[in-house]
Length: 372
Length: 193
Image (cartoon, rainbow over all chains, first blue to last red; front, side):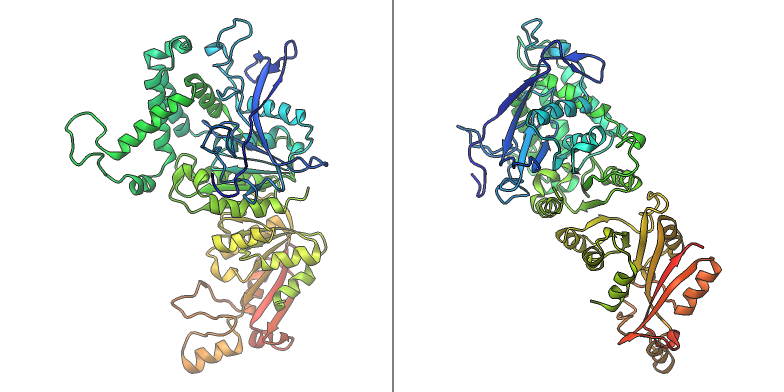
């Protein structure tokens, strides 16, 4: 365990939208009951003014920091959350929940459909980023928090942060969208479509009803491999793998000769153990559907007082800097006081999980100056 | 406090909305916030300088001045500041016009190339002037244009820009006599007529 880490943490569960008061989704369908898995770190102050919502990316979950009992791996953003860290748990009450549609404790396609007693599979309605935020809003209400100090997230987490500012501008003081976009470009939708097609092309997918047979392992592994290529940069791959061979010689067979091939296979097939293929389909679709461009961004408000810290990374070609600059452009039109950094990094999209020093320096100082 | 910062801090009214173009490490914006309770936004390109801004609680965005103003609605700020930056930007006229669009008033500060020491260096020594206001050799200077106080007054007249206030700074205080000869720096408060 790293220095200054949180101790043992626990995942909690919040269930709402019990029938007949089911949750209205953007698709027009309704769902309920809905359970959200969430974790909290630090203490909510008596004024309930120190709460920060952390939103996770595509394959993330509620376990953002600390370690679970009988586990050695800390949460996915443990470097950023804890005593003295960017999100300092001595000062802030940090909340992270698994998105609706996910597979880490929140209601999603692998959850049991109360009407059939079987997993929803493709009977699960399509969800959107707005639906994820709506579910999070129920959780924040449940925790008795009227106004969040900040909503922060990278990639799809940043999309949720942007959606929060647009859906509930009166319920947060600041937002930190990192390596994200107001909407997916055709290139991003195309990658997601190839990812989905690779899952659905696997015969083991069984049109989504695979829960009795087991995961479409090959399809999901390939989907994740595609993802990992887009998370890295040309330079970071060169530095990490170059053309290094796993063994000394070329095999002249279709095996993983190069280290980069071994890495992708390892990452891909490891992912199968921890993530539901249908959740991958639903969540990538939700990302593709988001469009907060133009008038959709913080609608009906001419001047916003929400403070923004927008961060992009120069080598990120999956969510290129110009997409963050588009956020900044819209913020200027809203008279928003904005801090924007296009950080130097060679790690590509993964940078938001790796460039801890720069992010810590910025986020700590930014949050310290939000009056609450 | 630097003399130009002192003058700008005196000019800006309490609670003003201020945009500083090329805000550097945010020294001026910090003063305006501290003394005038101003709401401040900076634009800067240098990442290290920007970090200092954020450490001091300032709002700063990384961007290019020439393309960074177009999205601000008209009259978004009470003051737009272009202090010691105009000599470094390519489209000076465009930036000044944009600044006048998004700000009620703009404050422009620049080194005077017609200062006595500059004139004598060029005239007697035949070399490019180097002084406190123009401290660079030709091969390292960020300045791409050199202008004098009268050049700037001519420009404002030609473009029909109202000069509301003007300040001329020498080595030790304000210059009132023959400013184009004795002032190293000039500060103008401009507005649209």
